[in-house]
Length: 373
Image (cartoon, rainbow, N blue to C red):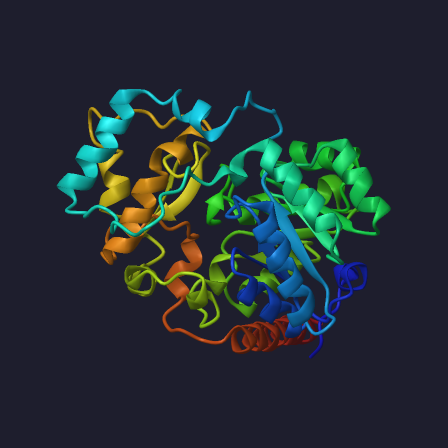
């Protein structure tokens, strides 16, 4: 059974499944398989590196459409150089991080390892450079993880024939986004990985659909990892699914993350093993629950700093935690659906099963209606 919704025609895709990933290998594979892969740009401190990766995407998507996701805070914070921002971090926070790493038995980075200034892609100014790079490529969609992009970005994207999407955690946010010219609203529920709001997916999707569904397609995000959940999103009025955590244990994702502890941590996690915290970026984000997250919940732990200072504070710590190989400390964003992922598979196989299971679920619902008639 082939499922087509208005978002398929809008984006030029075969299946109403949009997959977000920081890995270009995952994003390209999703597009090649008939969905739309969306590349997360926040990891690119150097816009030239993003440009090279998008060149790779252009060459490896088989002519299929793909998208990019940037992080542009709605309120533009005061910014400076990484060194200027680093100077704003209290010494007590630095001491807490170092003491915590020592208690967790996390070794320093190897001498030949490069220490970064933090993921400066969280900065509004860097995100604008990401946008400039993306506009120079044939990406079909540009999305903002923190609400609608600025009006000039929306206008520039539309001028290039691109579709603009924004993530929303409340119906009122969705209405405001559509008012700015956004073409797709991604209604992301509390269960989702990464930055997420307070309202659960089952409640949020119909609220957003009722608010803006007559004007733009709504994609459902959060707690979607199998075809039955895609079918449920469609039943709630969504025009498709936006999925992120479902791709974390694909063979293609392993090409991005070489940490020996990441796969072990993800495979071992249940749906109860995540926590929503500000310790990753300064804004609430859902992560794997582990000894690192627990340390920030202990009495006496400092409050996380606002974005982007928190990420700059923990940047080297994240490198050390990843390099340690300890699965019980990896700083890994993941949604509650991670508990459904129990093996490493190719992207194409995951997407094929999603499509098959969605069709089977819709067929089953159709038979129930026939039986009651």
